Every structure is written in C-alpha cells, then in structure tokens.
Image 1 (cartoon, rainbow, N blue to C red):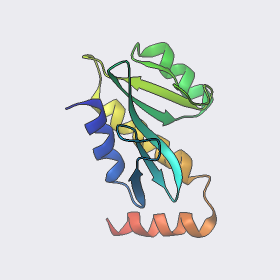
Image 2 (image 1 turned 180 degrees about the vertical axis):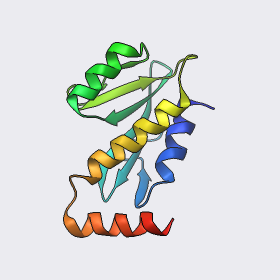
Image 3 (image 1 turned 180 degrees about the horizontal axis):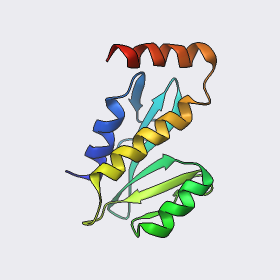
Length: 123
C-alpha cells in the first residue's frame, strides 16, 4: 500500500476528520475541527505526507528514519515530512497520523474535545 493510502485510511478512520484540496488537485489536506494535521502531496514525483509533531519527537524521528525529514513548506520545528520509500513502515505511518491528530485535538477547545471523546467512545 502506498504512503498516501496508508495515511489517508488512518486519518479518515478518526472522528470529525475532513479532507479538502484547498491548494489544488493532488494536495489532500486532512483536518479535525478545521485544524490541519495531515497533508498528502508530492514533490518531484515522490509522494510525501506532512504531519504535526512535538519538536523533540520530530528530531528523534529524523535521526532514526532516513525517509523522514523536516516538514516541506511547513514550520520545520513542528512538522515532519515522510517520503515514499521501500523501507517505509506502515505501522509507523499509522501511529504518526494518530499522534498528529491527537496533538491537534489537544489544542481544541473543551466542547470540541468533549465531542471527539464522545465519538471515540461510541466506536
């Protein structure tokens, strides 16, 4: 399965996620409560996924995985880019999508957090 499919499937399984293309076709933006946590795009024909991370976690990931870099066209401290790679670990991608989602959810207001918690309890 490709990077974009893995990331999209993981994102769309989470509550209150929407996908739009505000930057045009071929650039899918995934948001929770109108806050972006995943961007699927391509750079020079290579698939990439941008995800939100804490600065320390992002630095560690970049040190360990050769296919993870500072976020392309994003704040380099708070975003990473995962590039399509034959060594790509799909479980890692799923975990990073969920972590990015949870990081954004943690910054939402109380009613939004409660709505998401209720939806997660149902599923």
